[in-house]
Image (cartoon, rainbow, N blue to C red; front, side, top):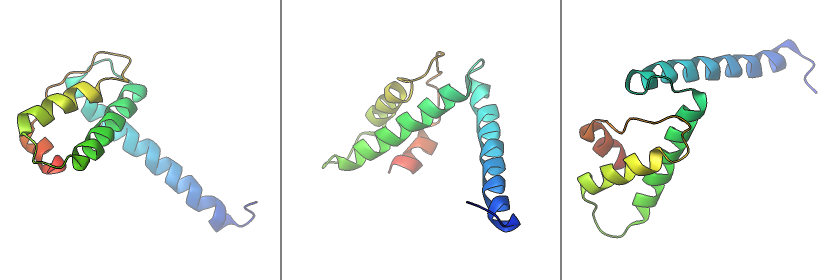
Length: 97
């Protein structure tokens, strides 16, 4: 049980940070996907993580266009609202490769 003020303040600050970060990411996410909510944002980034880890396991080099198509399909699987699959291939290539 937390009894000191410092022990209580640290988790509070972390929770406020996470709320602010989620709000910031959601604002950027809504530029391409109006009407999306936090569940869509979570599903999008979870799909991104799954694709990135799956592509790391492949033994041969990957084609960037095929990787982009796989990313677009997997990242929209758990979303409630329709998610735009438009993204910048250069940014995706930097993250995946």
